[in-house]
Length: 221
Image (cartoon, rainbow, N blue to C red; front, side, top):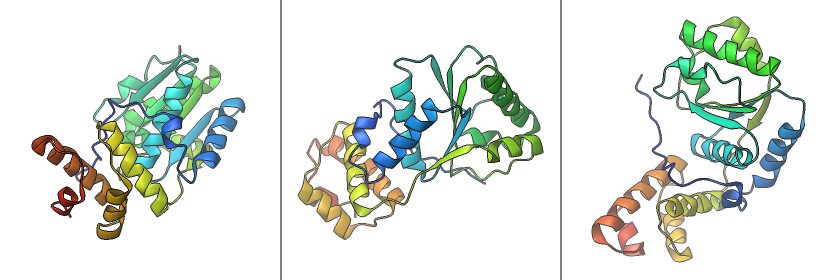
């Protein structure tokens, strides 16, 4: 199966301040803070791919300022990147489930889990919802299933308009309320469709050297 990965512009650092306006922010932030202060060794992030990645990035960007942390993505990477991480206090593994269906990759993750726990390090795992792989190592499955989870809730329309603004801000673009209302009233409210619209607006504004406007949006929906 071909994996479909959203094109996220990671040149812009997502901070918790960027997503304060989202309806679920306070609950999610409290869960993150509780995990930091707790004795829990590992937390698993699940939910909508785009918003899940926002929270995960914001978490990393907050702790790496004061705590020795590392951010590792398993997308298109060999699982050997999971080795030799014992010097870090917080270990963030992006798309950790990309190692599933591979015996040796699962063993690497299993070893990282055990080593980080014995060293007193925190392990933060983000599940990529677009990756359809099944875990095969029973011991790894039991460890993953036993952990504290942070699940991103369903987005409201209010959240979606704010996501559009955040995504455009990452690209150096701004949008007014009239244009946002027009998008929500005339375009699909599916988050993936909205993300695709943002990508097209980014490209069209660069080509035309114009700001976002309703006529410009009409060309794309």
